[in-house]
Length: 113
Image 1: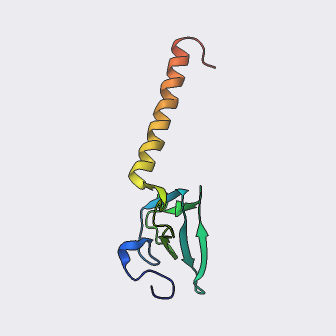
Image 2: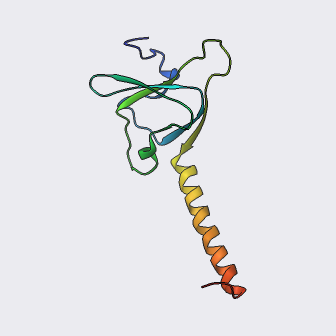
Image 3: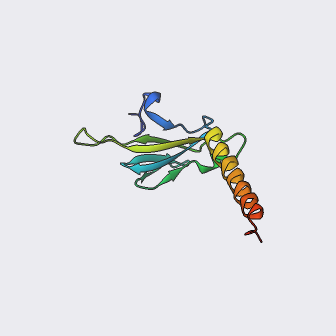
């Protein structure tokens, strides 16, 4: 580690200054985040979310680095959901389609407003 940040880039979920197109939801475990000019260190754990702007900005570059904190017992680690732009917009599009289908179905059966 260099200044608390892993030197092996493959251990980083996000690297400060390196473009990213995904968001991370932490289900369990812990992710360490180092951000800002002062390299402020904090932890994100259960139900924490990182990099939501990566889903909506055309060219998102994090101003932080983040990595999984190893479990001291060597088991468990961290469980996360990685959501990239393609999956996000696919879910948004499907939700819109479902709403339209539901509305059309309601109109067809005379239950719409």
